[in-house]
Length: 188
Ligand SMILES: [Zn+2]
Image 1 (cartoon, rainbow, N blue to C red):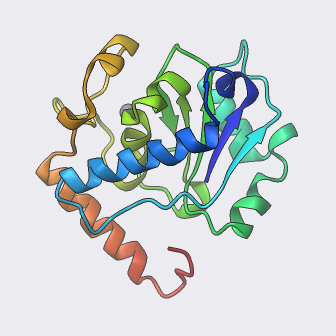
Image 2 (image 1 turned 30 degrees about the horizontal axis):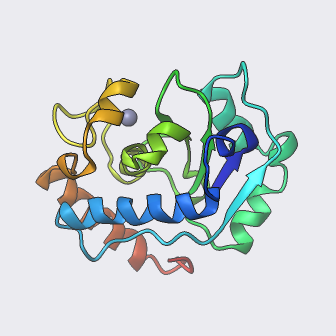
Image 3 (image 1 turned 90 degrees about the horizontal axis):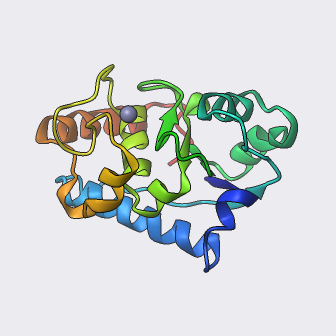
């Protein structure tokens, strides 16, 4: 499930929902091109939230969402209702491309924030999903899980060059299979 602020949405000429559909398709291309063709994200819901991220930091935006503060108060209920495994929030904050709660959380804690301009090239969504699925504390030297991107890197690099490494792909494959096989896993 992807949420977006008014400020982030104001940068799109087209409908932010269409843009998010396209972004998720590209994330799925990243999985596919990394040899993970049987793993894909399905966008179950998109919604605007009446949240002003101006002057805030992505860390605070993220935890206001996780804690259900103010405009995020219905997000947990919505997340359950839509059977979302992961919840992302699109913001306008160029100081960073994105942030996720932590590595390999349970589905109930799988939340991330991304800056709209990075999300537009989809790298950041795949990167944050990578953190949520990979049990890695650190960034890697190459590929989509590299750290220290600046905005120019992200905007200049074609998505096709940024993939999960074969080792990361193997970990993701195992992790997704493990989650899918849990008896309490009613979600997909
Ligand atoms: Zn990262």
